Image 1: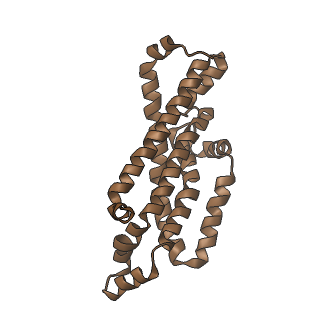
Image 2: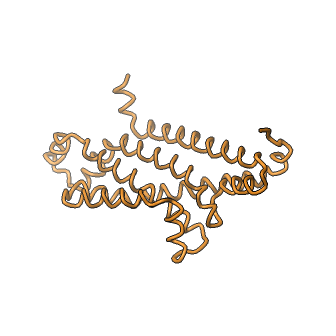
Image 3: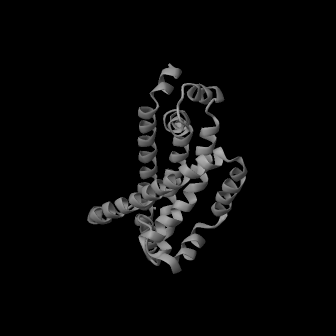
Length: 214
């Protein structure tokens, strides 16, 4: 299996456009997933009766095949980027919600009691104590959700979107392996670069973990 470098050279602009589109869809899904999962995770952490229901619901949504999710959304949002991002957001929830709940659970009870003893209000305790201490576990979920979203964007090709997934369709339809190989390599590079950047962000946001390891 050989790569047609001339084809790559003549399609550099298209490849750049597809790569940016692919990354935008994946990152938008993770962002929306965070915005939805954070308040739900706090609720699940605070109200134990809701914990099993919320986590169970997210698990059920995750079992639905990705292509089926996109198809079910078509009557609502049509062949648009909204369908792609909404479908991907649903898949990020199971990872982000569970990791955020586990992160909040990992905060020592004594730390929260000390904050309350100092007169810190519950909301401030959440923002300044619990979430920062839970951040390493939350960021682990963000990394998994990001890599997962980058890999799943290609499935949206079946509804007219899909970013780099369009290269797979083009290559298979023409029995031309170069677009397929390029699509796989670029998707893999996106996932690796995104994960590395998130590791850097986590280290910047949690400097105390570096001190502890040292």
